[in-house]
Image (cartoon, rainbow, N blue to C red; front, side, top):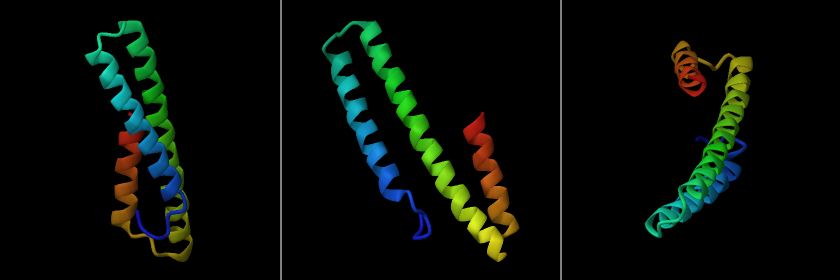
Length: 90
């Protein structure tokens, strides 16, 4: 992400927390913890990833809309955004 993104620190903090959570889940699996407990934690990680993805999307849209207002948005950038949105929504 470039300098024009406002949420970089928030996104990286969210991903760091999520990575720590995944490490904890890995340890749970290695220790043979009950599957329902692991599934609950995996669900929490999935929600955390969704939060991070939303932050990235919001941040990118904000920066893209700024570029679009100034006429700096190229057709290639729009196509890239559309592909990213398709991937995120699918």
